[in-house]
Length: 264
Image 1: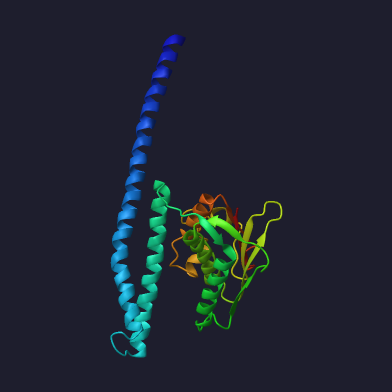
Image 2 (image 1 turned 90 degrees about the vertical axis):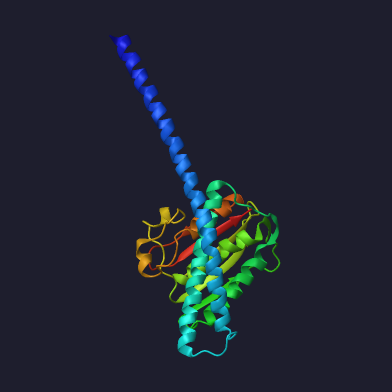
């Protein structure tokens, strides 16, 4: 009887293993199909959006003649919405490349100080041109001029990461400050980028999910509903490919946040 029971148990285990193998294969096929769909759909959506954004920009610049302030306001909303959609589609494309293992990186010497300062200046100009933010929010950059902040990295990818982090700070800081700073870690010689703000902060509940896909705080939907929840996940994967680290710190909701990027 014990031999028969053992044989039956082995047969059941083998049957379960076969079913599990089939289920895993099917899940892999579905995951690949999902990634292919994301990639194709994103490419197809990008073309008409680029046209919408381009023509809206030309209308705003007066290429088709003078327009009223009311029309200008409406066209500007079209332009801003298409710009947000282009960024979200870019995140989806990055996700599909990351999951398929086809993300391309062009490593070359990069001066992180020059990159971070130029981005800070760009965002500073954007803040100063905004009626809502110009008086309430200040952004600054700090780095030792004598220090060497050169790393081997993909300039466009690191620019994407830093731009995303500064943009997030601006979105979630109604008023106060944003401080972008660079330093060197003495033990390793690694470059450390820090982006600190006086914004809405991050709760202890949200922190573990911050760098996961669609990882957004529940309270953020009422403040900034148009985010994809993919930017920080993409940033994490890009920094991982550079053999670096990315993390966040906060003393809690309403107490600001600090984002760090460490590059070797």
